[in-house]
Length: 124
Image 1: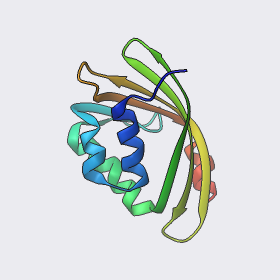
Image 2: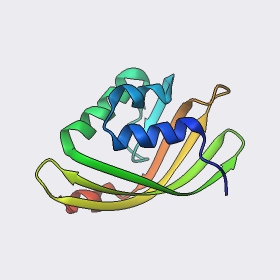
Image 3: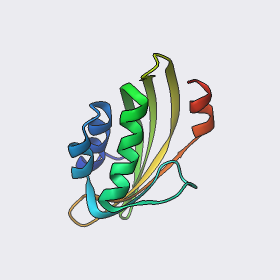
Image 4: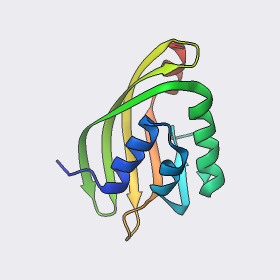
C-alpha cells in the first residue's frame, strides 16, 4: 500500500471543506478531470470551476474517506467512500476509485474517477 501524496490528500480535504481555492491548488494549471470517467473531460481552471460549481450546487456536507492507495510510475489509484448530505437534506453514500496522474512537482495533472453516478443520484 502507498502513502497518500500531498496533492491527493489536499484534494480530499478541499472537497470535504467545499473549499474551491484549495481544490484548485491541488491541480496543475492544465489539469484534466474526468469525474466520473466517461463523461466530458473538464480542462484547466475553467474545468475545475465547472466541477466545483456542481459540488457547491449539490452538497451542504461532503465527507470523503480514503482506503488503500497504490502507485505505479506517475499514477496513484485510491479507493474512497463518500457520505454526503444534499442541499435538500437527503444523504447519499457512494464509493469508487480515483486514478490520479501527478507531475514532477506533485500536482494533479489528470484525475479519472470510477464510480456509479446514476446510483448516487438515485439516492437524492
